[in-house]
Length: 352
Image 1 (tube, helix red, strand yellow):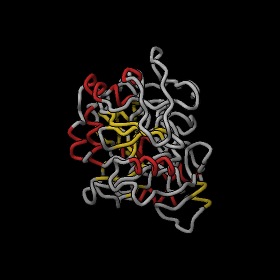
Image 2 (cartoon, rainbow, N blue to C red):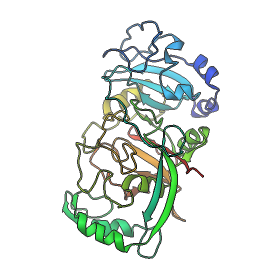
Image 3 (tube, helix red, strand yellow):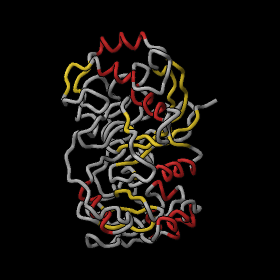
Image 4 (spheres, rainbow, N blue to C red):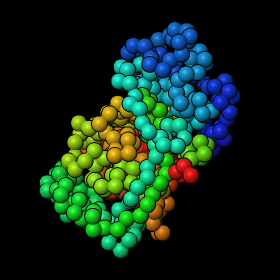
């Protein structure tokens, strides 16, 4: 299927999307699903690399993308996970057969749409009152007490920052008020599901738009991560791989993974490289506003806050050894950039 024809099926109504699914969820080889329908008939085993057969009604209470009306093109069972291809183009690992997570903690949405959290308060600006420079990052870097890398710049890895020095600097810097809603989890924003990956910038925008949302700006994403204290990590001042899914080594992509991105070779390559976690699997990877998995796991598309440069910005870093802090960003990727460890989340205006 071409990418153009896949996109034509992007916004099917829910009922039609469910009926049009080429294959519903894959067989479960690791125990009962936490999200499967209580009335769904048993699924039949599948051979790795094959398409998994199952009754269409089995996804009625399954993946959130199906309930939103997106088209499940196929499900391919690979050695480590099964992979669903949505709208012909993007991929999501199937978490149904994995061990159940602890119950999802409650969160205060404060008037935001379902599944979103309120982010409201004072966002730290640079000394000139601007939000479109890297000067705050540079000031923060100056308070690092232990660098893991020789690079002490935006993408360097700092293990520890001096909390008192940084708090004193933050107190001197100007602020501006931000008030918006943000998805609690990486898209599709569903507790216990794996994030959707292999998504271009414009496709991410379209997914958010279908829910009457939008991609977060880089400043919104940053503020949701660091809070009013502008702390380096969502959880504080020390880099901690026990809290978020970071510093995890794994094999890289195969050469033919995305040429095109809709084949069994794609699913096989993602499955080989995948080291991502389910939304909510790491309860300590939480920001001061209660937003989960902002650093590590999958890199996230946001929109540029500057008046120049590419429109698309990546924030948060993936699971490998990377920046994985709240402030730094990657600005060099273009509109067709695709990776197996790259996704997004959505934002919306704050309650009036």
